[in-house]
Length: 268
Image 1 (cartoon, one colour):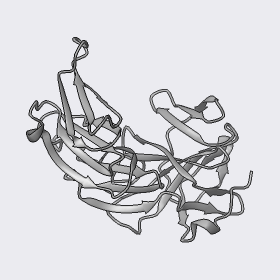
Image 2 (cartoon, rainbow, N blue to C red):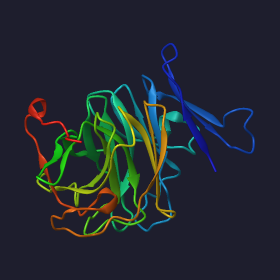
Image 3 (cartoon, rainbow, N blue to C red):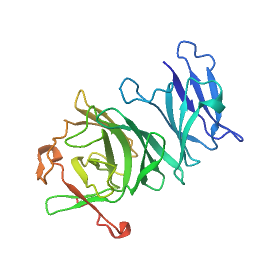
Image 4 (tube, rainbow, N blue to C red):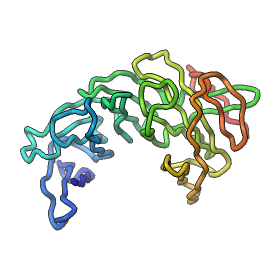
């Protein structure tokens, strides 16, 4: 097992440090030239699938310098450790992996400006979207996305999706929604809203953790609350539906507003 941690910019260096947890007194190695600003995300790729990359212990890293990088964490020579680099062009706030049905990896990243992008394993950009675009305006349900809380890799793709990525979106009122996209290879693919959790927070929701095995969702917000919710597996229904008990919503097409500033706010 290897543990990785990133630093803020210290002088001219922002470092990625690797430890063996059995000997934590000193890091195994330090990579200091991968990024030139604060490290904001680090995620190892989970091996074990036929489509998994075969080059070492792969780490995905992101930074305020706008770069998304993959490195061989087992390589001591930093000049040889770098695998691929993608330039988002703005500060990256979050990043992680997603996988298709065969386990083949791709990467996602989101910026401080609520832009969201998906990248190939080689970190070629596939798609850019404004994460605030997915919204619903219906008589029985109104939802407006204001920001991305975080993402989750489902145990298996939901419904007919070709990927395992679940996005948890938040509203300024403190509500949470689970949304997915059947594919990120088609820019016209619809967003699907599966479930909402409302009235549990007041203000921005900062963190979310989905325990699929126990059907539990944990959320934390700027209101100092930690909430535990029931979070059963979303139903793989692809047609519009009505609000059900517990604010469970059948997946439905989500509108994409072109004028973000003119959006309606969600009605309580």
